Image 1: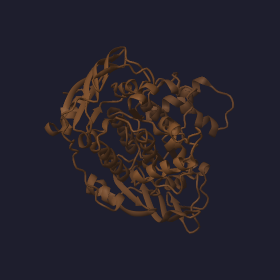
Image 2 (image 1 turned 60 degrees about the vertical axis):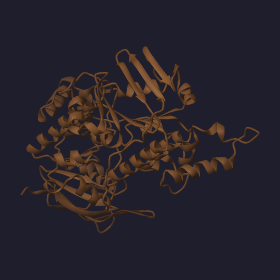
Image 3 (image 1 turned 180 degrees about the horizontal axis):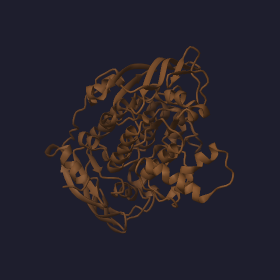
Length: 498
């Protein structure tokens, strides 16, 4: 058995009124890929902060690194001990080149004030060689893909004498192929004796890559398991404390005219010749790899980018959607893929975010804002969507991913739309919250709302949609009835291997 690199023993962390961690034991071996899973708020982020030295554990906690007790463990100490964290936001400098981003850490650590460009490129090349990747060294980081940015962040970590890399939700914005490539990098680091702590909500990735899996729930360690002893169902039960049973969605029969119809819709460089119909009470899935044109199509339906050719019909009448206002007046709502930067006003309260789309209707006869109407509207949607908040005045940025997504849903459902477009409705959301969001979506459809669900997760569209359009390189390559197909068949069309 490999030797232990890092051990947490009886680690606790209390904040005012909150126990984030309660006497947690955790150990990761040299060269091990160890996955940490749990629902939002389970304590994962606090563990990362303590291991990386950005937070101090409570008195009585015990940390050992390479068999030695650690009494002072600040961020600089963690780096010097070989611990590097790659956060979701990557913390790269978009206006610097790939080479500069990779080498900057070493320059700062060595207090070098004068840049030797030849040396800088050598540092970057040496880091890339450690994981057998090739990146455009002179390209600005802002110009390369998210997948390559992940590799830049990993290479930057490798310029130090790294022994443990912590990856926090590293695959949330990657395509399937990019995910596979990143997982292979982690496996390659393992062969070089570098340990990886992998934190993810995507259980299939956890089971694919992990040697062992630690499960935390409500600040406590549930257990540590070899990945060979786990499957999706068992891992879900361990994370949530309950069995989450998925069933296929069955749309109610609808023989009326479609609410929305697209005929030969095209936009140069983005999508081509898109045709489909959408009925009330139906959940239509659209899936495909990143860049397949799925989001670009949604943006056109919501009036952000106009198509070059084709027709859009609403209740049988041709319409032209030139703006978001046009879309909203027709009854189209759109929940974007990036809820943080596009779906929410993070510095505003939960209540303000909920009413932002309906503020014009919450006035009195003098056209002044009616406090009672506003309060009643907020209370209704908090209750109807089971948004867990201490107060409607709480900043929306303090909520979990699942509750933030409910707020975005609430603000658009409040407009009483006829068509709801959901782009990546459960990205970055834990398994229990994902299940709850799906239940909300199904309930809306059963009440007659026509829904388009866009997702790269095939199980998500397969279980929740009655029809699925697969997009590849801007075109719909196949339409599936989910009663007459399998996830594997859909996957073949998504990846272009049919």
